[in-house]
Amino acid sequence: MPPPAEPDSRPLTGEPLAVDLLNTRWIDAAGRHDLLDSLEGTALWLNTPPVREALGGISVPAGHDTRERLHQARAALDKAVADPAHPSPAAITAVNDVLAHGRLRQVLRPDGPGTVAEADDPAWLPAWAATADFLRLLADRPDRIRACGNPQCILHFYDVSKNGTRRWCSMSGCGNRAKAQRHYARRHQS
Image (tube, rainbow, N blue to C red):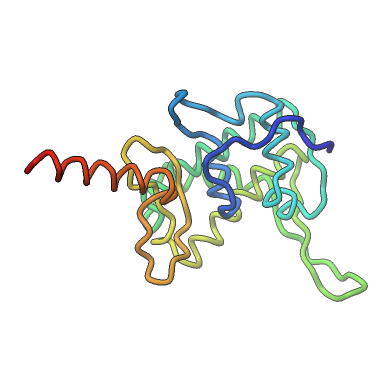
């Protein structure tokens, strides 16, 4: 797949694949954005390092089917991140519906054993990989999958800080705004 012409303008990248899929929607001063609203944006996301790595070099076209499946996976993850440690029955069903379309197959390679991700339709592979990554995060530290502490922000992150107290999608964005608001409130109280 050729690299997309436009740069990735999302405010938060570099998160694990499941969280990165959630963060294909964001809000900034210009309003709401959804990278998956267009086939170009879908191609851009499919060409990001976390996706390319998760797909193990398999190229998946950014067609309507792929985009539709990514929307389904993102909706399932939205339900599941509401309470990652205790997902609702609707979240469990939605996540399992996506996971039903793929699997890991054990293989023997010249360099030793390995696994290969497979999907019943190539258009499902990115959606399945992101949803499977969510299970990995749940198995590791479900309490570290968080929404940004800014109520106007819709981004999520996986807290890898040593003490697990990260509150903001980024200190340079939402964290600084919160600090500035607290400072402004203190100055105007006195």
